[in-house]
Image (cartoon, rainbow, N blue to C red; front, side, top):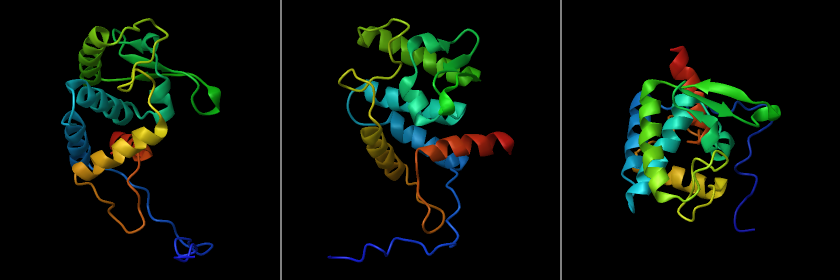
Length: 173
């Protein structure tokens, strides 16, 4: 073997690094990096809106991917999240800023994508399909790098799920 595969293993009972929680400044930098993604305007707007929802509503990535147009209630400012963990549904409220962002994104989306029925996905990739986790994670990690976000402690990972954790911590503080 070219390298020792056991090097990355922690001894049993060794403390794991603390989970990653982004600062307000890091969230701002991440959203700015998303908005500035190269390519067509739709890419930056789509990524900004997705990351904003993940952070502002504390969504899991799979919940974001499963969102359908009929799950959005902009008037009542809430999302219907279907098939959450343990296959339950829940309503998630959001603030006026999220509503404004979603309204802008949906206005653009209606003019760009053909499918605009309640059963159509909210977010589609450039091939007009739902996002895949692997590709999403790859772009997210690139955005983390562009935003200059580094783990605060050794062994800690910057991860998409940290947006959900950050949502919880920022709401409690």
